[in-house]
Image: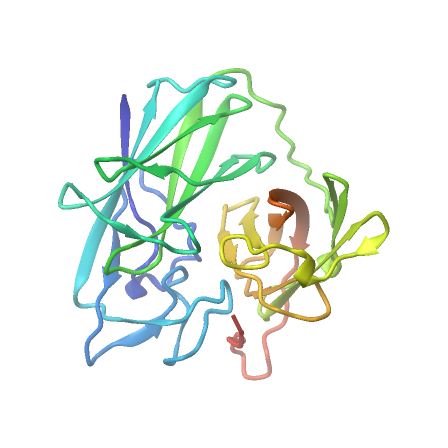
Length: 316
């Protein structure tokens, strides 16, 4: 079995110069991530986006999580070990992925977060293929799941979890899949309408995505000529939907939690750091089945507010 050790990315407040959760991996595929404990000197920051800081009781404008008290002096380091079986991953053949969150070489227990202990988002490097899966806990405390990759090439694995006694954490890893690669699409056109399983899902304000502001995500759903409302959707992972955005150029990762708005069946707010093309996946559940809609948006650079500061207003 092949073992790749990556240490968790971007959760320490001292890494404020890094962009969101897609910090650069080093050449040895081993990066250190730290989590903080509270004390009288604590400041408040987003567990998922450490560059977002504020006051107690405020929420992160990127993902809607509560800002947590953190202390830069007492750091606890975690590692994520990824193993694949078989060792050589081949396109079109099932592969078992096993992830273990470790501290001092011992597996760390995870808390349930958004109804699961471990969320794993897997995307192809060109962002044309996306999977959101949930590895199952094993007797040794690791988490495993079997996945089949459609084509050869590089894939990114974003794992989201909360160590017991720690903060919500995002880890980024890469694997190389052998086999014929799909043609690379460098010219990704904008896409605001997605038709899936008889549903028409529309990103109503897709042409108005900008940086430097609290960005709304206004999404409608129709089926058989009927416009759905939020109560038509079943809860999925503790919310009306699940939303992920990933930047095409730098693979900036945004994990977004919807909020309630009577105008739209799915509505959310976030804050996008960098301009560029982003792929978005919106998952919602109806009649026990999860449907995944995909969009492509071109985020342009927006003006800062009159004080030259980014807006941090958000409700979760």
